[in-house]
Image 1 (cartoon, rainbow, N blue to C red):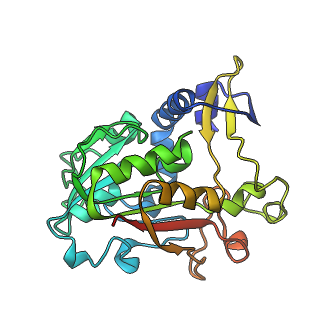
Image 2: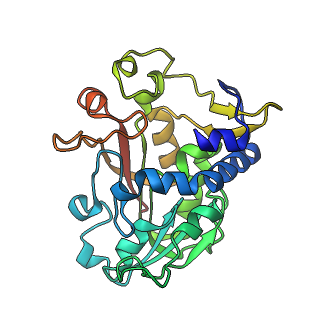
Length: 277
């Protein structure tokens, strides 16, 4: 794959990775992969659409942030926004989004240009930042969310939960989707080999891709379901709902290890809906 080649990736493994190394690796990875990512997944995600997961669940149908009519004028933070397509969709419905991501290249990819259609030309304020250290004041936002952003790519996901709680106003909602924790025990393959568990669900050692010097070029972190609930509650949230989207019969696309074959047997995504008191 081009990004691995460009970054000099020579191997994969499991080892401890701290917050700084993980942030550096994933910032570099997403900067290098921005074009490839949008070329491969852009038509599925849309330029101004809100898709929660590879199963194709859309906010338009799920309303996990709340009824769209009730969100007009609300100040909403998108964490790990990529090119901010979800925020653009919200802006088109009268919401006031702010989007941030660790990758400048991903954010640049979402900038409007002179050739953009009205839906993709929506201007959304963007910030480059690490989700473990959100550069916003306390009690600023009405809602915060991320669709597969930040949470699995940081060493200290408990800090992300705490930061989300800090920047939200009392009563604020925090909704995030990430890989279903059971997937960690299975090979990341869309075919039959991805249906046989081969790793311990309880092994929290990060998945690491590395170069010839042993430096991480990509890192992904695992938390069990109980770990995640502990982080959420520890940050002061109330866990309101957990959504495990089913694979729809009409979806034939594959996305990495997500596929119709696996999706009919194993859950691929978990969405956590949390609220502050």
